[in-house]
Image (cartoon, rainbow, N blue to C red; front, side, top):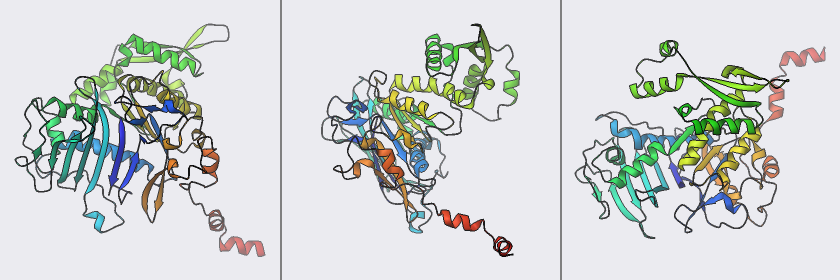
Length: 436
């Protein structure tokens, strides 16, 4: 689970901004929306929604998570001199040469299945990792795993005394994150590999217009039954999911792009060897199969999303969704949030971080104040703030959050100059015609 995430100098984010899922006071309002991954010491929100006007920076906050994942998972493969994916704030000359900085605190189950808290930070320019460190909390006091400064090489990087169990000092170039190199090395200590695998496997991303595919779930009867039951329970009209194996995969292979990794190609073809049919009941009680293309756009999106939700919730992973409600009914978006908040379903500390424009989701029946976040542009730069930052004597747990947001009480809404737009439709020729 993610406790907090700090971003500096990334895309529309200029100065340091903190997005926190840490629960300072659990209280009694929707206390079930809080997890305690390390027992009862630290509370972490199971879900959080981000609101804001178009171009306010919602997506850039979510992209920052993906950029951090790239640094951890992929930078270790960069050859000497290769550029790092560096996207600084462009509206300031000084920011264009300053490093991008990410810092994240999170929980990872260790090899004994006990959740440990870590804090990882990395700062980088287009050519170099200038700072990198990883700390953890074996007790209430944090301990260093490694620390790397701008002048350190693989020969001078410092390690903590509790970082044991394998080969620590591994060669890396200045554009490689140490965590990326060590985490992907079989002879590195198990601790570092666990942290690396959190970034590699436990962070899932869904874009608003992409089709998300959980590969090979068709081969697991229990998941097919679960998907089938969920689709039926949300009034899609689908009573059964029918999986048929295709006889010929050659047409699928023809439109696969050249150069894709062989492992992905193999897994994708394994997935595509199945044809999906949906059974609908006719007026006389018979069943008629529909192909995937015959279902609505929203049903198709939800169908591909359900196996992902099952996987994330079962494994206790983090799902980051941009525009949660995209192409789906608002009730479906509400359902997804409820699943993550419900301790009967979310038994393994899974977490949902999403952006949305749907103010109907911003209700005290669904979300706590600290689960609602806003992004707003101030002089061109994105700022983050939470509903929990407002005066708690005025914004109470039962206040009509969505109504007050629509009224502009919390900011983070588009400033529309309607009169100016109207005037743009009235040309001088129009005015002349009216006079004549």
